[in-house]
Amino acid sequence: MDKFVIDFTNALDAASIKYVIVSGYVSILFGRTRGTEDVDILVEKPEPSSFYALCERNPRFWIINTASEKEAYDMLIEGYGVRFAEKGKAIPNMEVKIGEMPLERISAAINGFKLFISPIEIQIAYKFYLGSEKDIEDAVYLYELFKERLDRGVLLQKCEELNVMKELNKYAGQGKKL
Amino acid sequence: MLDKGKNFKSRLEFVRFWADYVRKTPNSVWSRQQADFINALLQGANQDVGLYLRVKKKAAPEGQKVRASRVSFK
Image 1 (spheres, chains in turn orange, purple):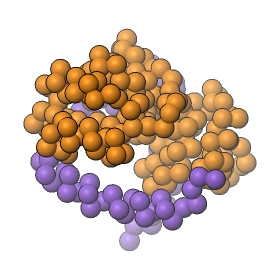
Image 2 (spheres, rainbow over the protein chains, first blue to last red):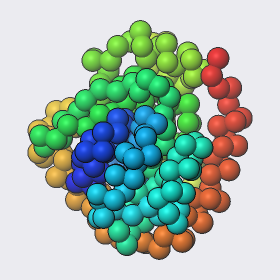
Image 3 (spheres, one colour):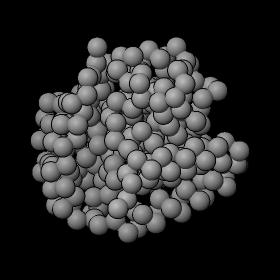
C-alpha cells in the first residue's frame, strides 16, 4: 500500500503537480489498523500538459473511472475525482481532486521517502465533520497519538469552523471540554 | 441483537489502546503487524473495476445526505 502511494506521489512530483494526501491514509500512515480502498489526494489545478505527462509517463497506472485522459482532465477541472490504480486493478486507487488553494500541507517521511500530508489538526476536525464511525475512529486515533504535539489553537479553530466542537469534546476529550 | 452503541464504544477503546501501543512501540514492530494486516486485505480484494465503480456510485449520495444533514461550515 505504502509503495503504491510513494510511487504515485513520485509521479506527481515528476510532473510538477503539487499535492496533499488527506483523509484515511493519513491515519493509516501513522499506524491505524484498518483497510481502505482509496487514498484521497488533493492537487493544485494542473496545466493540461502536466496532467497528460503524469498519465503518459506512468504506464504502470491506469485511470479507472474515465475512458480517456482528456475526459479525465475535464472531470478533474469540473471538480470530480479521477481514480488512478495499478493497471488491471481497482484497489487500491488514488482519488485525485483539485483542492482549495493554497494547499495546507506538512511533510512526512516514510522509509526515507517524503510525502506531503494534511496537518493533523485539520484531519481531526475534518474526520469529526465526516462523522461516520470509521471517521470518528480515525479522528480519535490521530488525537490520541499526537495529543501532546497538536497545536490546540489550530485544532479548536478548525473544529469551530466545521461545527464539530461537540464531537471533539465528546470523543477526544472524553466528555471534558478541551 | 448487537448493541451498536456498546460496540462502537468498545471499538473506540481498541483505537485508544492501539494508539498507545504505537506510541510506545518501535516503528519497525507495529508497522510490520499493520502491513501484514493491510496487505492481506488488499490480496483478498475484488479487483472488478465495474463492480467497484457501481458500488461507489450507489454509496456516494448516501454519504452526501449524511453530511448535508449536519450543520457545515460557518
